[in-house]
Image 1 (cartoon, protein in one colour):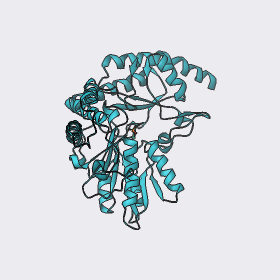
Image 2 (cartoon, helix red, strand yellow):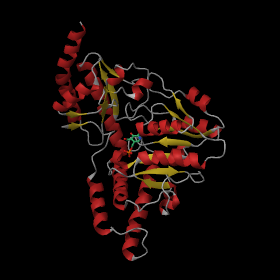
Image 3 (cartoon, protein in one colour):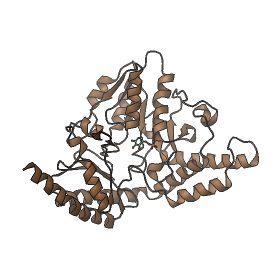
Length: 383
Ligand code: PLP
């Protein structure tokens, strides 16, 4: 099977597995304990923090380890709101954020907290004029993802950082899909807060971090003395060590990996467009991550397409969630102006450092074989 769902999760690097096992075996003690075994675990944690911070262009003190990006996003939003100056209680985010963040937005609204969503255009590009219009002196936080997980469309972070600064509003960037897909520097980003997740770069699931710029007010979600009082609970030392190993492994070949993935993604796009008439690339005119493409095969719903692809040996995914009532349209594609029917059709292929040219050539041929009859059926049905 060819795995083309790296945006959902990446296979765990052998280096990360080895370092996690080593930590579980030899540094299993509580890093808060003052005895020698505890201090051995503490040293693993300190070392891992240095390596993760270096990968992200941050200082070790700016790093708060969490259970992943979803928790980091919650800490950024709720922690900023709880510590915001009087009068600043509105949150502004994009309409294409990760479902976890949009669920939090819905919850805040239910509690009477104002949340405004910045629209995107037909290519998935953020509307900067609308962002500017939504900012004001009652805003506690601007939260925008670095790149969209479904389409790979990049958000205009330098411009957002400038806008946020002009309004005295902290900018939070959910950089979960940026890490490992471009060189990342928290220091240079202009963001006050940034979320990342280990499992998207070949680390374990259940580990991530929120980067918090020095001086940024933030109330903890989980009280306790760990992580400089910003996140209580005994640290996931082995998971954090695996995160650090994944950072190191990813950084070692990042530049060449990205160039290779971009070439392979373009080959995949062109191959599919040529082999399957009626195919369109969603967000084709926007700047996108090198590894991600979201396609629509005519009016074919994603669910049967993904099932056929998997039988043909290709694993991909869709932003449209299946539920009891059938396939729900993707909120990202709806925000891009697709109608409800088309918004159920997005199929995402995401590549990674392990993807080869042979994988891509196999995927093009297998997709052409698997989907041509399906396209013919729907055409016959419509005729
Ligand atoms: N934010 C974005 C943009 C994502 O793509 C993901 C991945 O699912 C998340 C947040 C959630 O990350 P985690 O699985 O670490 O909670």
